[in-house]
Image (cartoon, rainbow, N blue to C red; front, side, top):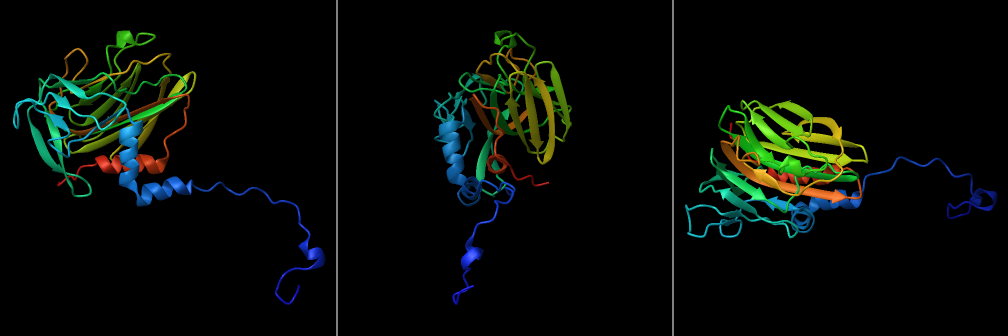
Length: 280
C-alpha cells in the first residue's frame, strides 16, 4: 500500500469476476412514477391508452348539445388513439365525487336505460402474443345481475365466442367472463370500487390478473386468434342487463407483439388516480 492508501504491485492485479448480483428495480420508471405521477399519467392517457374517460371538467369531458341538465351525447376520451363513448341511450345525470387525493371529479349515473358505446377502444382482447388492461371505477345501487362493461357482438370474434364482459351480481359479486372462463370475486359493490384487470397472452394461453380495492387474484383463458375493437358501457352489447349505478372513470390499453406485464409502479398510479374517497 502506498502513502495515499492505494494498492501497489501484485495487489493491483485483477481477480476473477464475481457472480452477477440480483437485478435492481428500473429506477428511472420508479422515480418518474414517484415524483412525476401526473406527468406520466398524462402521457399514458393521451398517447398510449386506447380509451381514457374521466369527468373533471364539465365543458371539456362531456358533450351536451342543449346545455346543462340535458342528455349527454358523448363522453370524451383523453386518448388520441381511440374514439369517444357515444350514447345509444343517454344519461343526463352526473354526481360530484371526491378522489382519493381529495380533488373534485364527477361520475355519470347509469340507470335501466343507459347505454354508451366506444367503437375505437379495446376491451380485454386477449389476442395471441399481446397484452393489455382495463381499469374502471364504479358502484351499483341494485341487487340485480347487471353488466358493467361488455365487448362487441361475440359472433364477430375469431373463433366466435360467448360474451366477454364484467358483471355485477347481487351487489356482492363481480363476475369477469372471458370466453368460456368465469371468475367470481366476492366484493361489496355498493361502495366505490376500482377494478384493474390485466392480461398477458402468449400463442396459446392468456394470463389474467386483477386487483379489486386491494383484493388480488388471477386466472387463465385460451388466447384468441383475433380480437375486435369496441366495448359497451352500462349494459350488454344487445341492450340487456342494464347497470343501475354510477361510473366514475374507464381506461383501456392494448399492445400487440409482446406479452410483458405492466410494471407495478405504473399500475399503482393508474389505480390510485381512479380511486374515489369512500365516506363510509
